[in-house]
Image: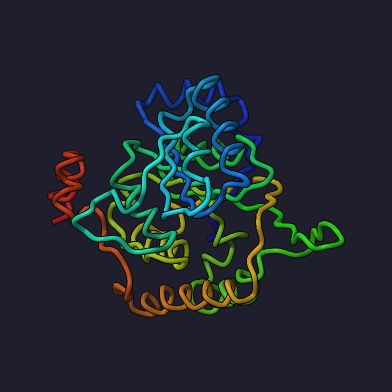
Length: 298
């Protein structure tokens, strides 16, 4: 069985999508995790706020959670209309760890939505489809709980754009691992995509690696707990972003391997991971409905 597949055009009637969202009483929050993204963050926030919060109320909040940028990322994001919060200021008694996964874990506590949507802060061709394409399936299909975006990822080279490049860690590392150990997940075109959306009741129950292993861990944990039918993917066309150096990709691969082999063949909490948010008393106090869900699972 393969994950359900959609195209962002399936959800581009925003007036209809917002009406469906409101009919079922859902709230949608957007998190943009950042670290030194001053070149792109202002336009990302501006475009998404204008189209998806002001013109169409698909989003109920836009929050930038920052790892401690040393450039103008936070100032530019705030000026563009986002709520900006330092990750270190969320759940301070839990301490602070550096990494993208840390920001995403703290977003589960900070954001109010029933659906949480994530968009990376380095997108150079930002468009509302990066949000409505992943949120749409969750609004329309209650059986789906987790939606990944996928796209062409051009490799920006000195001589221009090479449409054949990009997605190097996916093709060299992650896809072979999935094909070997979890073939149902190998049908995902971009398992490491930073653009995805999920229901709160799923995210609150899974551990979060604090680094780049977070997306791989999500897929494995959601698949094990809910099956491939709960996972979907949406074609978002093309995404242009800042490509990483080989050294950065090496560190990313190491963190992915740690997350992967802490779960395969037997899932367990890996080193450097945060516990499921639903296990924190602070979270249960903030979201009483989650406490009720926790009691039902016990």
